[in-house]
Image 1 (cartoon, rainbow, N blue to C red):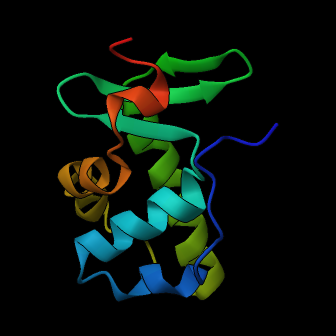
Image 2 (image 1 turned 180 degrees about the horizontal axis):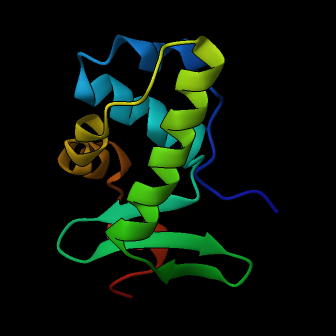
Image 3 (image 1 turned 180 degrees about the vertical axis):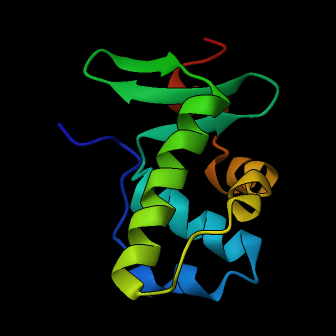
Length: 108
């Protein structure tokens, strides 16, 4: 069963711009995380598993996004990934992936 928050993929070359962290975070949430991770304000990251949503951590999200960005940069021939870009995506990623607690079964 696909994750309940999965969305259609926007074009991968959007990440090459590098100037707009929010746009890159949005791309990462839809293309790289594919609805498998969600952020609940004040609670933290959650990951979809075969048994439902489970608490996760920011390290797992950052690692997955870093790998996805490296792959996109390589496919686009954009040169090496600027790792400062990945480090600056924490807040925009949380913003783009934020869901209501009830979507992941928190606060029932």
